[in-house]
Length: 275
Image (cartoon, rainbow, N blue to C red; front, side, top):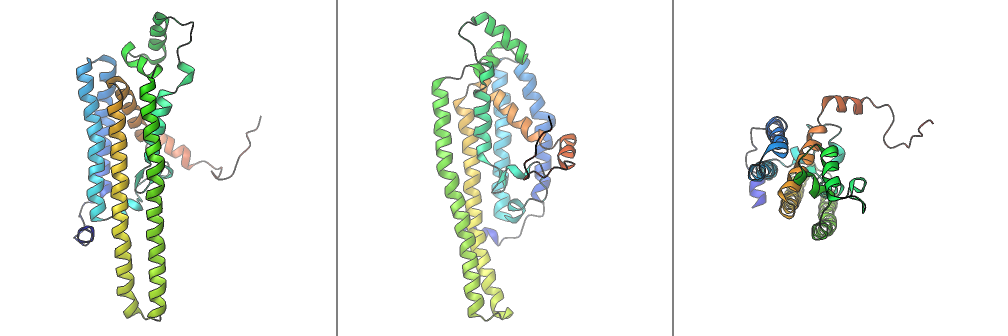
């Protein structure tokens, strides 16, 4: 079935055009709306805006699935991603570890934990001082429950099992392609008219597997994000999605990108800071 999808006529609209529209909606509409709701809105309105942003992310990954079935190459080798985004990519989009790492960083900010000597009233005032947000929004970040942290551990454990399995499938598909092409090249003695269809068949088989792996990786991203939203309170989910959206937006900030690209120090060479 996937092979049949792969041989269909490719979509006339590049995915980068969809991504540009999706990103602009995230940056200019949904993220500002959520921020206003965090500061001013009633819980029911905030819950609605949290779900709107969550569904915006989910719709993006659904669109990725469709794009993968039409043309997987534009997602596996996205030349429209900038130099800040590319280090975070894994199988066509942001690595699912990013979701859990941001969540754990968000929940385990030890510098802002309540001390034993701090009264509840003092905690309320400190929350307002540090976050400039209502008490019910700031407190969930400062005091995540043991049940919540246990669920986060479970999500991370599942990721540690699933991610290597997907990496192995990619490695096996690539190794199989190389082996098949090499064997047939020898058998055909390098004759182009004979080798070309054989190589084409081998590439088609690998691409079919790559589409399957990509869809599974994308399903993993969607499920991790949905799980995080489901296990957190509406206020925790609001602050988490705000941070996640801001991270995506920040990677495309022109000033930050220009500073990164003008850096003269190679990133793979340790540097010593002058004292």
